[in-house]
Image 1 (spheres, one colour):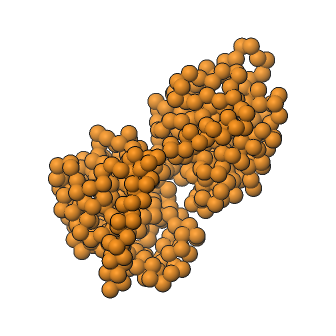
Image 2 (tube, rainbow, N blue to C red):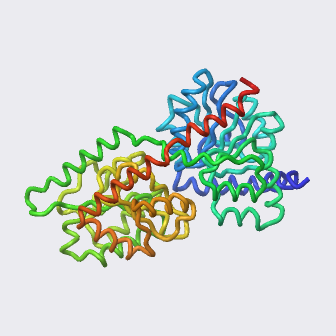
Image 3 (cartoon, one colour):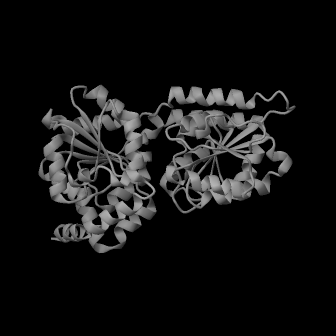
Amino acid sequence: MLRLIYTLLFALATPFILARLWWRGRREPGYRQYIAERFGYYSPPPQRDTVWIHAVSVGEVRAAAALVAACEKHFPQLPILLTCMTPTGRAMAVELFAHRATIAYLPYDLPFAVGRLLAHFKPRCLLIMETEIWFNLVAVCCREKIPVLLVNGRLSERSRNGYAKFAPIRLLTQDALAAITVVAAQSTADAARFLALGARHVVVTGNMKFDLSPDVAAVARGAAWRTAILATPTKTSRRHVLLAASTREGEEAMLLEAFCHVFDATARRDILLVIVPRHPQRFNDVLQMIKAAELSVIQRSATSLPDDGIQVWLGDSMGEMAAYYALCDVAIIGGSFEALGGQNFIEAAALGKPVIVGPHVFNFSDAVRSAKNVGALMQVADADSAMQAAQSLLYDAAQQREMGVAALQFTAMHRGATEKTMGLITDAMNPTL
């Protein structure tokens, strides 16, 4: 009965959801595309026996790369369907998997829409990346005897409290988690929180993001940038590159202010600050902020590299994060200076870069704690502290090397989650193989 009420409320809210999509489409045209898919109508030819992976947005899509590769290896005869919820996630999925998987939007959580997807693609299993609990999605898959696995599962204390706070949502969540075949959790703390919410079968497998190999071409591109930018024969000292990666709304302004406060005009001539906003629709807004701070700036989309007179390089490109990490000396990770939970820092660590994060890292709390313990990461209280820590690191090559070595060791010791997860997937699919 509770799920029926939820379904009716969702159906009643659908016109408002569509209006919001259209409104968001003013700045992001992708929200106005493929609307039919959100109701379960798909243009690709019908398939059967698909391995269905759902990754809500960019971060989850990137994390799915190791899983896609493992599924291709273990189930070469089965096609892969990858669904997402956001245009940026879909664009990233197309970039990474266009010739390896069918890319589509997940339908809204209405039984008839989910049923249409199942009829069109006939999945053998559903693998949900990280934390995306849709009540009808799980219920309809279970009714059709399709195994549902929550993989690379993470659940912060804040999210757990959010699910548990309102009794109807708590009960719906309990039912959904109890119906999930297995939760493959990133850590023991995540596992405990899933169990507390009602999951019945939870296994700690680790974080699959540690299994991702940096894009070789992007790393080579970043190394070439580094060689060109640091080749400054007119200067007596080497230029330093400071990266602010995956920054979110509200963070660029405070980081720019802190940069100007900590590094005086003379010091700024020796620093190239690279800012890469998390969301592409904000590229122009961040450009205006940089200009308002009276810092000289060039955009990545301008194709030419920043020369000695440029203080800020705006990374207004998608799919090049590995190149920016390869370029930098030190990486400040965004999403952690506002109460947003932090962004993934593992790719920076995998390239041996010293990492600085802010106070808000609840989405990566276990990984941050582990990285701090081995000296691969510094956590600071605010943007000013981040710039002060960066200043110290940029002029201390020995500490940079120590943190870089620790970062490489940290990522190496946490690999293996994907193979553990594939064992659970194979067990879940065995009855139908």
